Amino acid sequence: MMAADGGSTLMIEKEFPKTEKKKTKYDVIIIGAGPAGYTAGIYCSRARHDTLILSGILPGGQLVNTTEVENYPGFENGVMGPDLMIVMRKQTERMGTTIIDDEVIDVDFRHKPFKILTASEEYECRAVIIATGASPRKIGIVGEQTFGGRGVSYCATCDGPFFRNQELVVVGGGDSAIEEATFLTKFASKVHIVHRKDQLRASKVMQERAFSNQKIQFHWNSEVSDITGDQKVQNVILNDTKTGQKTTLPVGGIFVAIGHEPNTKIFANRVELDAQGYLVLKDHTKTSVEGVFGAGDVHDHRYRQAITAAGYGCMAAIDVDKYLTEHKA
Ligand code: NAP
Image 1 (cartoon, rainbow, N blue to C red):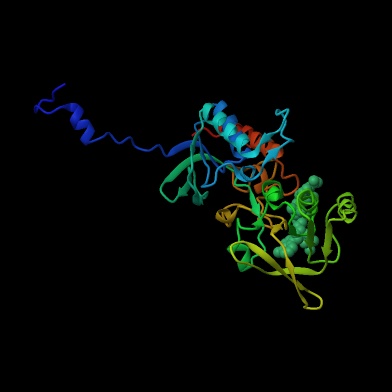
Image 2: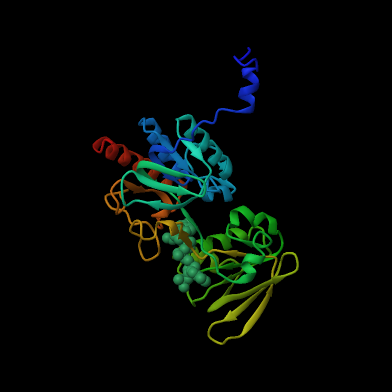
């Protein structure tokens, strides 16, 4: 086809491609793409709300770092964590939710519509669901960062099998630390539990299991002061907090299991957080700002399960639906 000036329209279109203006206004924006965020997306889209998930740079949440998940209902033979998250994402998209892998850097909840800012875009919406989850707490020493992925791990189920017949350190005294240490004895020749107190916080039954395990040795009143090695972890140096005595443990790896921290930095002074930084929810999923809701590990430090996070995602979406119906734009 020829254009009026004799040139080809095909050519012109090629040279000046039509730029579609990026859509930036939605009914609901969900921040975070773990089980809570995806479930919220499915329910919001099925309720016919124009829904965007801003998934951050590492979509999928903590399940992306796990191996087999055996306790998520619907999978008779279990499912790999990353596979479960891929299926959840596809299902969410099929329901009509837009998913953008961008990280939110700030939010403005002072006026409506709410504003959500990423590094490249500013979005507007009538309701928000915060589902940013939690991340493993770090010890905070230099060696921990230096040897990240080279012997320092935060997930025994993910990385345990890489340490067959090696000695390992597990840091912490809660249920996670004891569970991880017990699990690691399947692979390791010996597991050293390093705890800063002289007694465990973990439940009695788990303590008993660990105390009777011949492969586990406890180091009480001790903290990890350094991690050294060449290409990977070779030594973990302990400091006895009572005597100041240093002990070097030659080990192949160190698993840090000292709890989690909610991913709420960007929400400080925007919505109410508790002393630990967890989102405070009232009346199930409502935050301190009307129209802003929360779901999953970002508020729940008690259950912290994929299935409970998904359940909260569903609850938040149902609450958003009610809110949007009552507050027409
Ligand atoms: P947690 O109960 O908060 O325990 C964290 C442990 O790490 C505590 O022993 C704490 O020491 C220690 N710790 C914290 N910060 C530290 C630091 N900077 N340096 C050294 N040590 C540090 O966390 P969790 O074990 O992850 O458990 C979280 C929740 O999930 C709990 O409610 C737990 O019951 C639950 N959970 C249940 C299961 C299960 O039932 N199968 C499994 C895992 C988790 P202090 O004791 O001195 O404070």
